[in-house]
Amino acid sequence: MSTAATDMPGNTRKAGRYVYIAAVVLLCAWVIVPLYFLLINTLSSPEAVNSFPKSFIPEFDLGSLSFFANFAGMLTALKNSIIVAGLTMIMSIAIGAPAGYALSRFDFPGKELFRMLILLTRAFPLPLLALPLAVMFIRTGLDDTAFGLALVHTTLAVPFAVLITFSLFSGIPIELEEAAWTLGCTRLTAFTKVVLPLILPGITASAIFAFVISWNEVFAAAVLTIENRTLTAFLLQNLDTSPLHLKFAGGFILVVPALIFIFAVRKYLFAMWGIANR
Amino acid sequence: MAVIEIKNVAKRFGDYQALHDINMTIEDQEFMCLLGASGCGKSTLLRIIAGLETATSGEVWIGGRRIDNLSPKDRGISMVFQNYAVFPHLTVFENIGFGLRMQKLPNDEVKRRVERTAELMHIEQLLKRYSGELSGGQRQRVAVARALAMEPDVILMDEPLSNLDALLRMEMRAELKGVLAESKTTAIYVTHDQVEAMSMADRISVMHEGRIAQNATPVEVYRNPAEKFVAGFIGNPPMNFLDAKSAGSGNWTVAGQSFAGPAIDKAAIEFAIRPEDMAPAETGIAATARVVEPLGAHLLVTCDVGGTLFRAVLDSDLVVHPGDILTLAPQADRIRWFDPETTQALS
Ligand SMILES: Nc1ncnc2c1ncn2[C@@H]1O[C@H](COP(=O)(O)OP(=O)(O)OP(=O)(O)O)[C@@H](O)[C@H]1O
Ligand SMILES: [Mg+2]
Picture 1 (cartoon, rainbow over the protein chains, first blue to last red):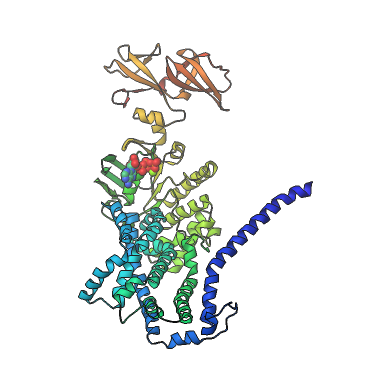
Picture 2 (picture 1 turned 90 degrees about the horizontal axis):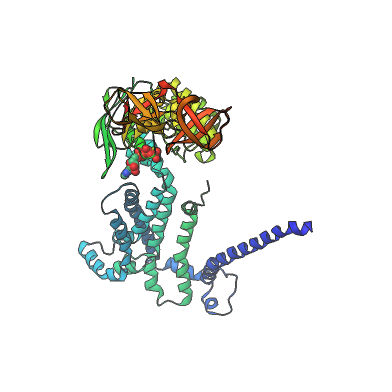
């Protein structure tokens, strides 16, 4: 009797754990399996890619990859992508963070309208804007430059930057800043010494977000650049007509840098979601 | 020398007048309590002195210097906040030393002063911890230590103990009073807890709807309330009020009894007496007991005098039952009178 009674909660807890583990495994599989096939196909010879059934062990045939490495313009496109994404990251934080701060700390006429407008910038589909933008860029000489494309990507990323930093700043009690002011800080030093250290993880996360938005964006990149293509635009243009094994390799090349980047800064992403490590 | 002078300070938030023409002087090294109900403007006044809020009109002077145009850091004040506002990304040591570092003091001087104030507040063993690793009481000590380490002319505190439990509050109250007396700073302390104000303050400013209702020593505020609001706000249970009809030549009829009062030409005024300033006697005010609450040392009897609520704190040896009619004689020198129109005290 007594053993049964004590076993009961243990059993239900165990069952709960199995469900939990199963869910985690399923989620991981959801993400990892396609990536794994991408990896296998990338590292396979063209014949293996087109054959069936698939082997689960890659052949380590570097043919497709070395083809890309030697493909003219490939490395330039990668470099362009990094430059554009980096610029987008910097500009969207430089513009978005002060706006987020103002929204959370100051009362000004039209504040609610301003918040609405920020969201509304996402209401216009890019294809609709592409033609007038292209014309405007050609007139101003911004077409086919990394900076010009970064500007477009920044407008895509800024709403998120504003909203994320707005909630970050709102999460920091104004009393902390006021305490800093009474302890000898100006508005600026209070910001750099108190607010900034507290929101840095969140800022970094929203910067990463901006980076990823720019990295993945293909439409504006394809329309607005010709010589200075980013990786997405470059691959879109060249893979369309390529054989399957090269498509896989191209996809792999597109995914991996973003994965490495996110892995490197994962700590800050966790911090944003409140799974802080400290 | 840090005398604080508040001259004609008023504050509006849009249409709402939070402070009306406040005038007040706080002497050097004085401990002044701002006491009042929630929403009466205590924090607003304190924040105007600190420079966290701008007055709509009026001036603030500290130590003979007009400071209402200066930013908070240039006013020679430090402040303790209700929610502690301990910086979460810094250790206790760095929190206490924050202001000193802003002044660019040398490292050993910072260390010396942090350690001394930490010792004063009994938190020297916590210096390496972060705010997340402290209890509420410990955080409050850090906040006070951080303010004291600045060695300010003036220390401003906005309900610093209100988030602590009752026992800790009592302990911190005594400790804080001792520490502040020793530090020789002028202190303004905002609270809505009258016991806190009575026990700590050299002087109490009772605030009511954005005005100073009375500014006097704790005993004076208790014994001689300047207006009816103060009489009803201070004291637990508060003062009793009864209608008084003129019986000519400074005599007044209260609940059928005649009392000597102010010799003024009015048909009706108000009679007031503290619940503990009465004793059962042969003649006096007839009060019907409704609720009897034995409190150990005393007996709190809630009565009814001609339909008016009337409380008496009596000796606990007395035996009183609900429904009994008590004859209560007020102590003559403790009777106070108020003008029902102006609500001011009469003498
Ligand atoms: N920023 C503001 N905007 C509009 N009204 C305000 C603002 N700050 C305070 N008030 C109003 O001014 C009045 C006084 O507020 P204050 O914070 O000084 O009250 P308090 O006496 O400190 O009350 P409590 O004991 O609850 O802290 C309140 O009615 C409040 O609603
Ligand atoms: Mg307040």
